[in-house]
Length: 275
Image (cartoon, one colour):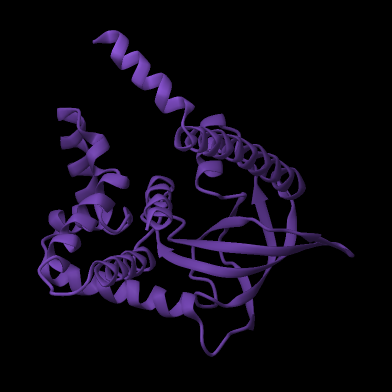
């Protein structure tokens, strides 16, 4: 029996299908390694250019969140375009985080100018790895950010989906208790800033039982979401292709109405490629 198994394995690896699979595995492995190398290099260049400097920043607002910190009450994610350093202009293509005491001027999707932006250089190596994982090039801390909106599109998909995302949160919050809402927002929506006190209690309970990895949003929760909708669509008398198209549409809508993470993006990308 062992010889038969070995012979079957040899025959499989000699087939064209196995060769194609191995070639694809090697290609994506090398692609991932190259992507990580260039991302790390780009972030290092960004930090060296911006750290401990006061610059005028041109950026697009990606999100505005309320923070639980006593001092810095707002977290703004910016997509940096360029920064003005004296007479020169530094071209950028990085996402930045702005921590501010007051809410800056502008809405999601607006193109803004941030004056006298002071960039902070993180010293902790683990925190640097975290910023790299979250695709954040640098941090800005501002008491009262001096911003000015220079462009606001009449039709903005990013602003539309951001407003819908907030509206969905409000509706769910009315129907769930604080603990259930914090758990739902963390696991299925990827937002841990909603109710930090309730989330902290939940996290302590998970740590006690050694199951803290279950409340971290990952591909497992996307699979549960897909299984639920697949079961519903299987009851509808439509063709296989129509069912798969509907499932893909629902998944894309779910992606737009929730907060992304590295593990969720990985699972979502695999699902889209598979479909």
